[in-house]
Image 1 (cartoon, protein in one colour):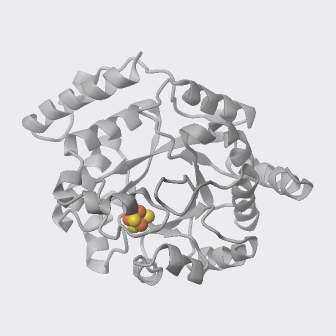
Image 2 (tube, protein in one colour):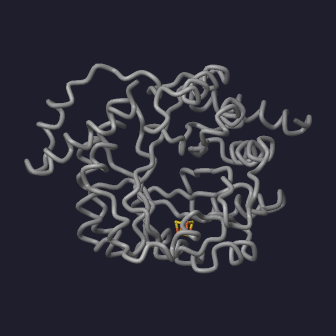
Length: 329
Ligand code: SF4
């Protein structure tokens, strides 16, 4: 790592601990479907799958599996990063109903990342949602138009302007071709929309897309550290994958408050999950949940107490068993 980046990270680490303390957490994203109506962002897995998914309804998640993920998150100390993945697939009423249920299961208001929502849609979600997320992906306009030709930034900006009583957040993927000078654009965007949170991801190259490698740890950490130094109080969430877990201590020191995107149920208690927890310790942070040890939980009691009908409870029991069988050795 070059000396300048090292110094940035040291400053960002001090600022983060001074302002937030040592606590860190894992944020689990809950997907509503595997289908995306846009489907053309150049780096995205879905852009390689769109033609194979003839019927969007086949890509829907079952409500039971979303409830199971919410239950697991609650009991393992994970936050819900956001609900996402429903572009053009569910009617609004169903989206609101799912959001309500996940919010009730987790006893918290949620972040939503469901595209550029209109004012009447925002109103319908309001009782269960604290904030909205814009998947900006990359901030430089020309690069953005090239990479996300059918997902313009402007409707997200309109959503932010309408969403006066919601917290606001954005996502950005590092490694798509952005330049360090684009940081000024990011800084201006965060200020303009008074964002309280940002989620960074390191590009995960997907076969059959133009990308073959992700960013270096230094580049990824640079963007996080620059953001932390410009915005001492913004919440920064940083994605990691099973392959990138050994850089987690660096991205926490660079100013991330929490980690997301790690496939926590598939990799629960795995070697990678252990490395991730060790990396958190190495960064001098305290992890508020677990990715490695299943606590003793009376699942039947928890399912019984859920505010859902009995048929759905039976489905949740079955689905939970499938998850637990996979997660426990
Ligand atoms: S990045 Fe998001 S909007 Fe673009 S194709 Fe992938 S899922 Fe769809």
